[in-house]
Each structure stands twice: as C-alpha cells, then as structure tokens.
Image 1 (cartoon, rainbow, N blue to C red):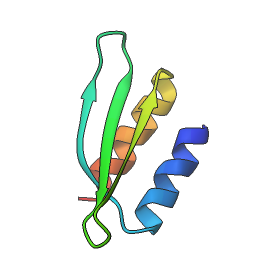
Image 2 (cartoon, rainbow, N blue to C red):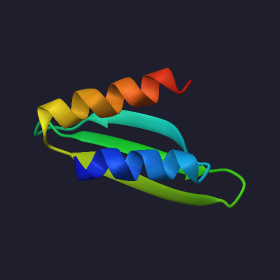
Image 3 (tube, helix red, strand yellow):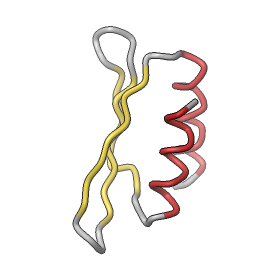
Image 4 (cartoon, rainbow, N blue to C red):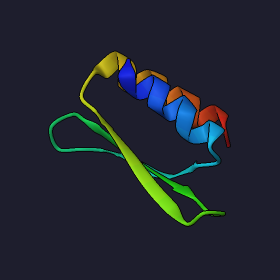
Length: 62
C-alpha cells in the first residue's frame, strides 16, 4: 500500500493524473503532472487490490 500513500502525497502537492493504463503484465501505470511547477511523476503497481484502490481514488478526483 506504499503506492496509495504516494498517490495521496502527489495529490496534496498539486499533481493531477494525466493518464493511467494497464500494462502487458497486469500492472497499472499511472502518470501525474504538477502543472504549476512543471513536474512529472509516476506510479507502477502490480498488486490487484492496490490497483483497484488507485483507480478508484483517481476517478473520484476528476
């Protein structure tokens, strides 16, 4: 669940998800950008439960 904490931290620092996609090996790749500071970051997760939590969090932030 380390990625959940990173996700919350990114949003608290002004990052927004610009895209997420399912990888070839079942992983989730999520890409974030802070438009004010022009910074980018990403999260990659292979845990199915964590992936569902990440997607749900991102989808409710729109």
